[in-house]
Image (cartoon, helix red, strand yellow):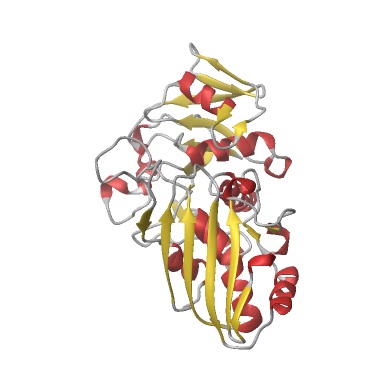
Length: 342
């Protein structure tokens, strides 16, 4: 299936890189990228090298005259339009990934992802947002969403334009922990804490330009609400995000009040038997730093040594997640399935 990609930020570039280099995603054919403000040469440079992920190993060239980015010999059309309805998508595109972080709110016209369908792309059938949906847009996650296959097949069968959200990096790391604990022991309530890499929206109080390189800030996190939406559950939870100076690599800590008594051994066994087991990794060193997770394409890296049993029904579970490529990989698993049924 031919797919278009709107956006050239960190998540968009991670999606493009993985789609071009990982065998798991070889069926995903991204044929057109819309970059809004980024020049074609700047995109090439960023595909070759990333401060957080280092050298990509991709062969990246450009055809300025033809307006094409050439990755590993594959020609990808490039455009720079701000408005979704003005993007001149190449013929045959049926699905668009929107990674701008802007067009994800159905309730606001200037941020409405359905604007993609007002353009000239005749065969466009769906949009998948690499972020949580807003304004009535449902979020889905591969493996996690309990009725994912039925729900997506129902959307496809309607043969009407549709938009779905792909949640967030923190939600992707939180879901396997919360859901596994809930299925094994029942979760009465929980509190989520994430030590999160800096994001573009972060700024210093003194007005300094650039990311918060010398500061840690408290932020709200939408992962608690998004987790329940993805799982279709109503677990009482709240949370907080500490935005740090790290470029990529984040920690998540889930402090749970359980309905049944649990031991550290029983919790580890539950994760080994969980449906998420293929997408959970474990460190090979003790006390891994945030940079250790970079390049890990799983949902979360559990830290077994950091599981704490406060009392028999209160447990703290911690993990690491790559908030760039780790999220992009699991998001692409959702896209891969969706493309297979369209």
